[in-house]
Length: 400
Image 1 (cartoon, one colour):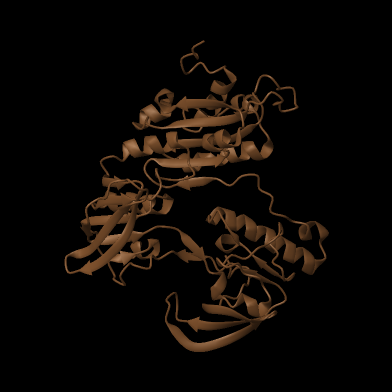
Image 2 (cartoon, one colour):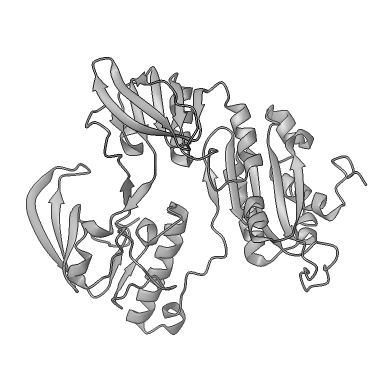
């Protein structure tokens, strides 16, 4: 695509040498080997998209049997026993892959649950379906030491909270570090261009993705959470439109801004877990009254045909006394949709509809009366809206 648009691509490590110049130390092909050739590129505008890198625990040995998510994708064999440090999305996605290939897995997580950020009812279904995939899921546990031995990587643990139990040390063929990512803001000599970088390596931007230097923009992981590719793409669109508008004198393009209401999250595991907008946990913490519509996939014809009925779809609507969509649906739709989540096969393919509903300010009537194709998993979104509205005939009526 870049070539078709006459974009020149230079491979290498880049660093600013001034407010309008970037020096690139070129590398060979797609690898990391430096050629020794350096090139200085002049620019009128720049977009920083330097991304992030996996956090490496300081006590982990420098050993090929200790990898991050990138290294885990380049292994030549399948380990017999594997430890995943971190019970977040990245670790569990990689665990799904390696378990499918035959590895036995342990997971260690400092918090009291996996997939922090997702509602517990979604994770509960995932954990039930994956009970046999993992030998041990060690919650409220931290890793405190690791040693490279001929037999493997010997790992020691400790309770994350005082009074907790301490698991016995274990030896693993492979240890995957999935404890987060850190931005690369301090690796590009941004200060030489006058761009401010936080102590953690993030670069602050405004809604047009503009840094403190007006002609330099930044997008993606380097500007903050959530570190998701689909967020970065939309940020990049904004930066590119603003730059094009300024250079072409197009005021409409130059006024572009990143103002997304919500950004979906997806765990590409089996089953998939996806959520967007307000969660039940957040609603409770913030004192927001919500009306929940939950549609179990045991009532979905497509899920039954697929033999995968473990999932469900839920939608959360504003149920505050003043809630109402303002378009004649007040009192019937329990206010506008605030969030939603799904667990089950292809959940990630469907969460976009819920995101769109939130962006458009839809209520339960809007969603429920939208005709979804049958039989599909996607119609569970419409059914969940009907449950919230009280008009769903595919599930038993609510008890009074």
